[in-house]
Image 1 (cartoon, rainbow, N blue to C red):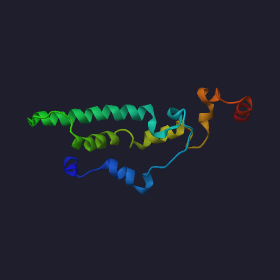
Image 2 (image 1 turned 30 degrees about the vertical axis):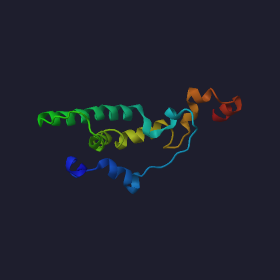
Image 3 (image 1 turned 135 degrees about the vertical axis):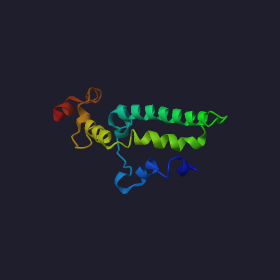
Image 4 (image 1 turned 90 degrees about the horizontal axis):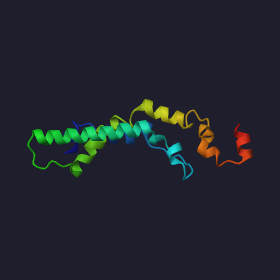
Length: 131
C-alpha cells in the first residue's frame, strides 16, 4: 500500500539505511542540546514543519477531490507525510553541512565553546585556555 502511494519511492527509508548516510552517535552534555544537535537546525525544522503541512494538505485535497467521506489524516498516511517532508528538509545535504559547520563538528573547531551560554559556565582558567 505504501509503495503504491509513493510511486515505489521511499527516500526517507532509503536514506537512513544507506551505508554512507547511516546515523552516527555524537556524545554531548545533557544540557544545551539545542547548541550541539546537528539534525536540529532551525532551518531544517522549519522546512520539515512547513512540508508536513503541505503533505497533509495534499492528502486532504486528494480525498476531497475523490469524494472520500473520511477527511482526517489516517495512521497509514504518516509514512507518506514523513517521506515527503523529509526530502525537503533533513535530507538536504547543503543544510546538513551548514549545521555541522555552525556547530563546529566539521571541520572540527570546538566553536561551541565560544557560545556565551557555555562560556558563562567556564572557569577563568578554562576561558584562558580557549582564548
